[in-house]
Length: 401
Image 1: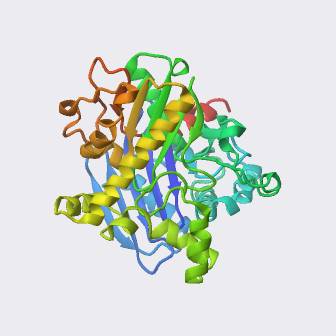
Image 2 (image 1 turned 90 degrees about the vertical axis):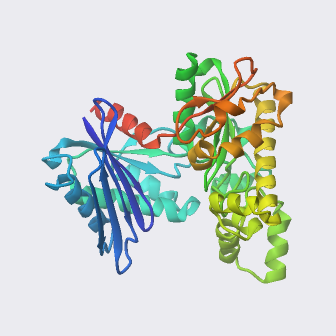
Image 3 (image 1 turned 180 degrees about the vertical axis):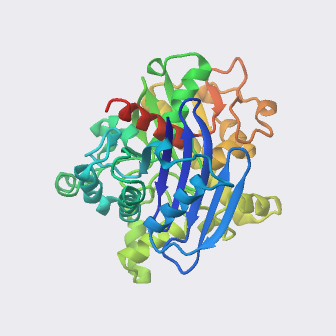
């Protein structure tokens, strides 16, 4: 069974075709600048064949047409007939309180995703466009499944997901903590259990998805009991361009002093803050790291803040879990920045972490244990694979049809 995995953004569309007989990626690609005068299409197969085009894609339907053409192409294609695509799985950012698990797409499901657009205006709107465009290009007979970033976090108890604002706002607007990156947290936590030869239901785990967007989750007995992102992906610790958690009075104070609208504030806190705002250098950690090495004081401060905030969240979740068996690092920084991992883990002796600097050094994007054998808390690097989780869910649902 071959499954096409889709991640549709407002002006982009990422895809992977996965052969579920061996769970291997056959091809992947990205459509960028959808809706702009000239878009960019990139396609790469598992055996190294590539195609890069500058081509106008007026909408997601035209983007899917490029995907379809590439998959069937005589030079860079990986299938002979479109019927080889047995099903399509979509990543959906916000499932709200409506969706707590992956589901088969029908009109009612699409309407449910649409109803959650106010909670994730850019993401869910783009996902709906992607689903409808996919149906138009691949046909209504190809089953489609939606997998929600928020679903894995739906096990949080009310004491963790509620905000201490008047309860009526939860009732009226469903304002609560939802959490994101759930598909990633789900994959790495289950993979950790496999690597350790244990049942996740018998473990206390803290998973750290650290990238340009970042979140941490506390997982007990296989279920999330808390996570750092909140109503939106802005909450938690500082990220590439996002503030992370703020004193709400910072928001109102800046609004009053700078005479900013809610939209301008959202832009400030989502796109101009975090590593970029503190360092003044870049939102890309590689640039901030270079600047730190050159002695840039604001770059140094940015990294000190990032490490400190991550350590605090790990400490909070160790308390919430009443202990921790293992910590996982994943995503762009978590998988590739060995210096960041070491700085985080070498100042938490109280947890019983014995960090193995030699094991950690140079580890980039591979599975590896980076704690000493006698460490009370195991520490691992596990590359995430959200696409595979989406494909697995899609396969499981389609096989029941």
